[in-house]
Image (cartoon, rainbow, N blue to C red; front, side, top):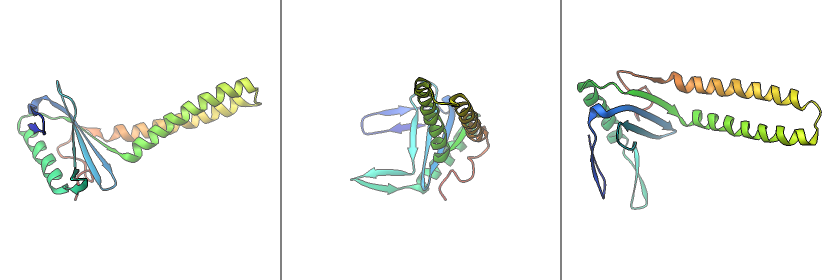
Length: 155
């Protein structure tokens, strides 16, 4: 696979590709291609040209299908991981709330709030369960497949 930009040209062997992460956020689709010995490569269905956003969904979908064809032909079967923006948002929110709970617990202990331990424990159990379910939903979509997951390529 050859990647050219304004300043450089990079050749990535297909056998070096070990993971492809496809993302979807509304009508914005993008993929991250991970290869051993190279920085991650980001490919999107939208680009910015002359301060305008240009939609190139057919080219993006074709690129991923051709890439998958070449990987299959070379015998490489990278991990394909799919992630939605909502999964990342919920996971980030649960981590943020965890930090807030820790700070509230620390300063609540200094203020000597009644039943603080019970309130904190209940909230932490709920948050842990929520974060675990979010992670399971994210990990469930990680597997080596014959094709990209339905819905992660623009129609």
